[in-house]
Image: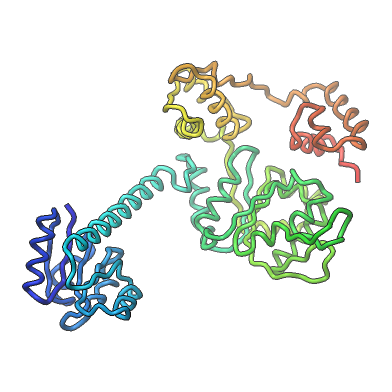
Amino acid sequence: MSRILLVEDEAVIRTELRRFLTRSGHEIAEAASVREAQSDHELTSFDLVIADLRLPGEPGTALIPHVQGTPVLIMTSYATVRSAVDAMKAGAADYISKPFDHDELLLVVERLVQHKLRLRQTAALKSEVERVWPVDGMIGACQAMQDVFDRIRKVAPTSSTVLILGESGTGKELVARAVHRQSPRREAPFIAVNCAAIPDGLIESELFGHEKGAFTGAVAASSGLVEAADGGTLFLDEIGELPAAAQARLLRVLQEGEVRRVGSARSRKVDVRMLAATHRDLPQQLRDGRFREDLYFRLRVLEIRLPPLRERKEDLLPLADFLLAQACKRLNRPLYSFAPDARDAIAGHRWPGNVRELDNAIERAVILADSDQLTEDLLALAPEQPVDQLEASPSLIEYFKRFVQEHQEKLSETELARRLGISRKALWERRIRFSLPRPK
């Protein structure tokens, strides 16, 4: 039963409306003026307020600032366009003219009451989601993740740059999206860029845009991803892979708030919040001269470090249950559960690929499952090795180096990685590890 406050100075009309709305299943409270409504009732306890526009003392619209989101339906005998516009500008949920048809009134009342109910349900659901998953669905009960959530909440309302650190697969982009969604820029674009996935020769054009004729193949002017993120957030994943020239351009964006397209003599003003992430040791790259010190300190206004999954033992099973529910929904399957041996395997595995590895293992198990319980064999967890197999075998290292050196002039990085049976990112990582820079 919904509670409605009826504010009407004419006793006959007030009594008639009270009887009609009571018969329709609503609980009615009454007042003859704005002052009486404020003194005799807790205004925020109602699902709807129905108020006459012309009341002794103050007009019915004077109640709107005091009801804190409760819809106010304004009624009046003076059905003019101007009074309707003024009532709606004041924040009224709707407007109805006297004399009105009772069925019409009932339809409007039911619609506004249901709207208020949906708002309450949404608020309750949001509160529950924030209690269970404090930051945009991210799971984490351990102290390290609580510290991450706390930093996100503190830095999100600002425009400060953030450097997000953590191993591959720990959820660095999730953190960046959470910062964006909790910021005043949430309605503006969020642009994510993987710096390691763009060839060196194209990275400046992709980020900063180019003018027609700036280089071979530039048949038309094009804006870059920095301009696309204007007013919003630009997330640069694997920032440590950015070439030196692109680092200098990016520094200017951060310092001056302007971007200059490749081949242009004119700069354009941009308002972009920058978030960056890497799994690399940036201080070491500073010492090696591979990353600009001034850019590093510009990016590192606040640092958020994500713990690897092996350090979040208490989060493993709740996170696995959450990812399982998501996978079942995504793959249009009924809600599966983990068998005891699968739960033991999840709890005992070190997860070198972190959350990404866990998510992939669960999705694979859901696809292959013949029953509603996922067993350990369906997870197909790879046997753990203390070091990378490639690093453990000198002969494989030599083969890798020789193969890359012999074919890198003829093959693209994508084709080279495919021939080696690894990802492009893995190829890049091993180039760095074994000091095999890409040819200029």
